[in-house]
Image 1: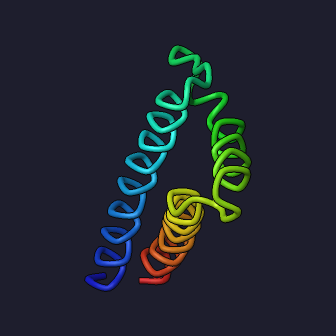
Image 2: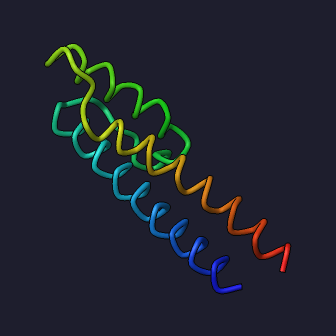
Image 3: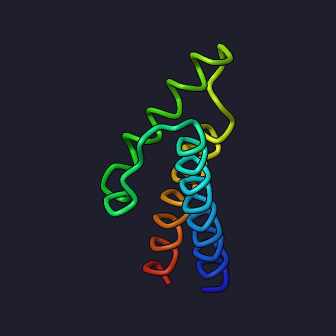
Amino acid sequence: MIAANIVLGLALVFLICFVVFSILIVVDLDKRNIKINFLWMRLFLIKYVNQYRKVTLEESGKVGRLFYLWILSVNLALIFTVVGLILKASV
């Protein structure tokens, strides 16, 4: 039970990181004068992340760090959530 709570706590931490990195990506695109629809931001988030990847790749020849951090945080949040729920159900 304690392990399940720890794993779910880690999932929450990575979920918060995912939200923070999403906001940072949108702010970076806004600074680059790419039009952002803040009303529909959650709906278009994947589009904005893809735009960020393309823009940073064109500018520097490498994909920006925020893209990799965004991918890592969302995947770790999903993995820890699934593992935590499995541990909670098995107890």
